[in-house]
Image 1 (tube, chains in turn blue, purple):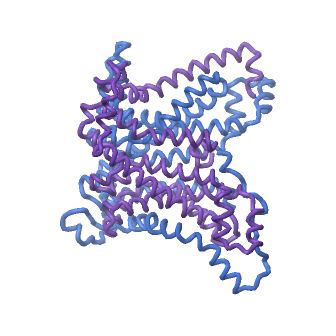
Image 2 (cartoon, each protein chain N blue to C red):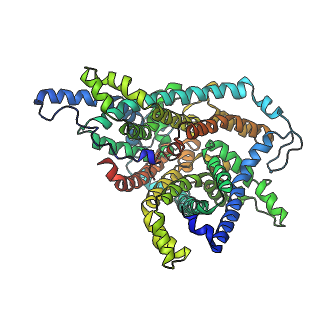
Length: 313
Length: 282
């Protein structure tokens, strides 16, 4: 990660003096910004376009089939009013929050931090093997990870087999406790990211600080709370933000494991948006959910960008 | 190192012992689902449970590796991910140059826009993107899908590329500039050769993301002969997933190998494993 956090090398700027006459300068500015154009066109058409049409579309009654498919009418806030009266939607909001808090904020962050700290004291071989396993779960294509998790949590899967070994008759995780299954699966899949971020952050904590605290008699827990965590708080906040954003857009894992079911018992917002739009042909409703997700994402992004502000300036 | 103290004291040794034990236990939990993939793929009688194969067979692999089932979808994945990565890298190199080298008024808002773009939840966008593709008549178009995937990976690619370019010294460029080389000549002849490893990291990063992307082609592509492996493997899971576990595991492994190989290559050869891993700032 360090290779990406270089500050801009001083002296790389300022080709050409500041004293050139005005018209030449304008032409030069245009010439110099020309290479930005292809990226702007691509982003405008394929990212900005859908975002804007999403905002607009959420105020219409468009659908994929039927009479409304031909000409979508403007319906104002109808979709949103309908959404907030829809028990499925309210449940989905709650499930999304549960998924975010359980798998990203608590699961991945705490486990990632724990792993990063244990790694510092672990044996080199243990460190390498465990690190590889954790990272493998994360670099595997999402759909493969989802299959592996599906098999693990299936009624006849590995987990229940293990529980049977100690005499416990495990539940049918994917049906009886779908949220627990997908939360644990997402922790399994995503912890590597937090582990890598926190490992990098912990190596940046100077040893003499923790050592002098140890000499002053601060125990392990005290050193963690008063020295280490405050020193890496910037990494913690950015990591929380990023894992939240990543988890907010998890679709494949849940879709493969439970398809949002049984019923809508594990439909987080991305799944519900998909179901409403493509399964029930309620494109307007699906778009309204997508819009709400985009707004939530945007709020997190703005907080994140404010934290990164010094990098841009 | 922190363990200079730890090694000498008894409490330090105990700490190491506890750490190792806990690490091994966590590692075991992480290993179980992965081990199932590996063992089931060689097992002629694979089930959903992790078990030692009842025999060793490559039948699962050979029966999956038919043109229709695996080769065509894998080739489609190569087209989709390769096309997406090539377009993204070219556009990102172009965009990174003025951002890294000139002090333009547009740079700051542009970079903020890019950062904002890296955070967009792409899954949330798929419903409106579908509507857009319907109105542009791009549904089931490989090129449309490639361009959308390129656009959605651009923000991160430009951000990475600019950071790599910032660390290329400007001295050589100044020499080229003094010899009267144009901006494009300087970029292609001087800067790009100097930052080859950085470009490779960005290329692989985008390629791997596109290779693993299931949702975008799942929504935007329809014809079976255009579907990439991510989607065809899901179709296989839907059709035979409840019976042919060994084949499903074998197919999953074949499909994962390029990603794992590229990751190892990037971290060992290019030394950019953490860059690929994080790509984002910690």
